[in-house]
Image 1 (tube, rainbow over the protein chains, first blue to last red):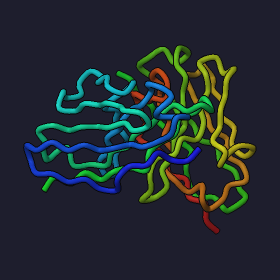
Image 2: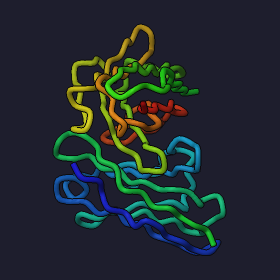
Image 3: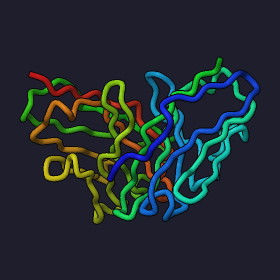
Length: 110
Length: 118
């Protein structure tokens, strides 16, 4: 199972909105509403930010939102803040009954 | 509160073996699927394996199939990963994670570093 494709980097100024894409195939992203997103700060474990395409776990700010269209899922961060600077990974359930992660995106707050 | 604590990482020679452990607390361990996920230095996340709550269903990534074995002891609230025939490319931080729904992981341990080098 090949990794899902994410842009290597995305940047924005404080207060702006940014969107990270996550492109797969009909065997993963396009075939199931089981896409999740993780935030990882340097040296730390990943943190679940979005599950099942657009659901936020308790405690995750509503500045984070998820969506999906066809084989591409997206994570949008609205009102970008300095603490949002981190690596972000998407993940999807696949037709092999296993998960696959994205290649990862480094978000920089200018 | 939910806690996952990995142990067992270290330096091992190519072809060697290592057993990772993950001690779980703060939740009913026997109710949850669990996974191992790894991250090579400076690289992205790679799912390694998952095991069902009872241990009856197990899946592995192709990259470790036949070399790694996942197991659990619900009486001890513990998850394990037996790693054999280790290769340089297995060098990574290994995280244990609690599965949440399909292909989501809501709690992660702090990770344990495995280095495969001669």
